[in-house]
Image 1: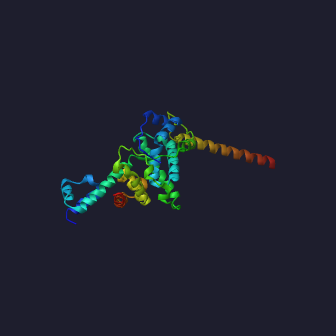
Image 2: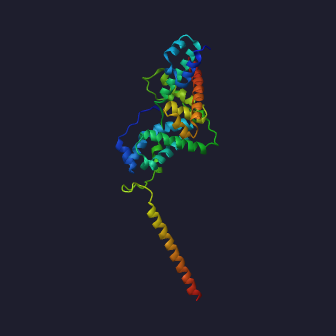
Length: 191
Length: 117
């Protein structure tokens, strides 16, 4: 099931209360950010069950690290970093298990809940890009997702994925090239 | 492929169709190959823009699972700021443990000697 992303916002004191050990406040943060964290996890691991585990672990890590959260970045940005690290840890554990990305995700364009007002090619492109991303190699996909959807810098990507900046740039270039080809096929198929 | 095609396509591939200069845009208007490349890049730009507002719905039980897995942690002492124990505290703890061990050993040895006597 897909949905249109709603920009999460929360009162500043919610983060502050959670930082001081208020579990109710943290529960509220979980309610607000669960879908965006799960979405990032799905994009990285391409398996809903594994993404749910990554989401759970990421929030548990966040809860334990709350006292160290200084508020230099937005809570959501901080959660994204934790999610990427958690997903990469899970990926290492699951490396022996070969997942079928299409079967496990099965993104159905008809089931997307995008705003009908947006309509046209843009609304239809989201499931197409999600499918196309699933066909990239894990690291290439992570680089493209973090750069082109989450707007991370090459340096941040390199640091979190434990690759060099040059490798990040090369993978981004190759990933975009593959996506362009796949989306061109998709566009031709619709024409 | 013409001379202008190389930088035009490199720019499109690296930074997207919106990064083209005025002269590159003019070239695209006269070159079918570059026009196709720009068209493909625009599809990608649109797709990424759409992905930014596209979200998967988390499992309904995820919140419950997270809260069940998060136990209370020790709230940092506002005075100490949750820092690790200082050097003096560590030395005192080690000294206490060593003294306890020495006294214990002494008592055990003493009792054994008394029994032997």
